[in-house]
Amino acid sequence: MGAEPAWWTRGAAAGTPWASPGLPPGRTVGCQPRTIALFRERTELWSRGLHLFGKAGKERVRFELFASAPFRGKDLLFHDATRHFQTTAEEAQISRILGLEYVALLSLTNSLVRWCCIGDAELRKCEEWALHIRSDPLVCVHADSKTNCIELIKNNGADAVTLDATHAYFADKCGLRPVAAECYGELASCFWNAALPPGYAIALVKKAAKHLSIRNLQGRRSCHSHVYSPAGWLLPSRYTQGSRICSADRTVPEYFWKGCMPGAGGNLCKVCIGPAEREGEKPSSRCAAHHDERYYGNLGALRSFGDVAFLEHHNLLQNIDSGWATGYSAGDLELLCPDGSRAAVTDWQTCNLGPVPPSVVVARPMTVARVYDFLAKSQVKLEVPV
Image (cartoon, rainbow, N blue to C red; front, top):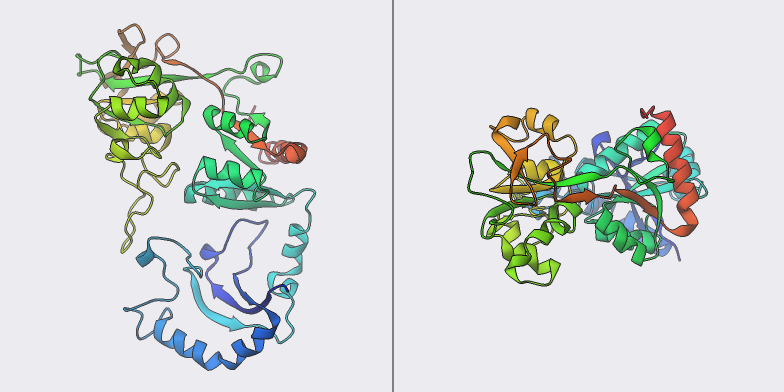
């Protein structure tokens, strides 16, 4: 027996769930039909609860029904933006509450795309994407990691995600297929009949640390884009084999003293700092393998730095000049080369740890065409330059 709506929440637009073309409806409290009557009989109890623990409740200091920060989360049980509950009509249908337009969009299963978003930051960007694409329904699905997204897509809980080369390899082992690859060069160089232009993995150090080379980093403080990333994890492990550790999973953590490699755990989480703190909220995503961790990704590794930072070369000069490497200019930094020498940060084509394949959008085999069509339309409608 399906659940039917008994109550729905009212709140600010900023607290609405997921992304959708236009403004999404609020959340609904559902239950089995035979229990709706009981809910309605207890209206006085609900009202008293809101009087005590609602936004303006007398006892909200002890417990606030619509607050998630004390539990280190967001939108737990109810959206934090909820103001109060509103009862539904006696024979209310879900379509009346959600709105016919919203239900119609969700019914377009042949064109609907559910994009897997890793962390809150990606979810917010996906929501903006959905609001701007409008004519093509996009639903944003929240996940905690790239691995979680792979599992969701495999089990039909989402349709697509963008993965780095390492995770794309894992996804292939789970039966997912490539839809499109990111291209970092000119349009003419991005056709499939030629190798896609790669990024490059680099090791960045302070110019003043003259004693450091790629050969003597053991026991140093390191910063990496994230666990399993080609530039931050896989390629650096080729230069730490002097530790005589055969497993790549153990090589990097045991080679360095401490650092930040989001998602790694142990000593390589000690330098990570988590998300930007909000008043009254404790960081809950410290060392998480997504953008809620401020030291995640290429920009995060540059911001964290340590004795050495492992990242991709993309937009390196712009990121340094924009203040991401706090207190440093491009002239204060150098690259470590595989032969033990050093080079200027502009010489990444000749001084790098190896090429990094482009990130890939993956999906289940039966949805590849749908996702590709959606991406092609998005690129045209949002006027992405080529």
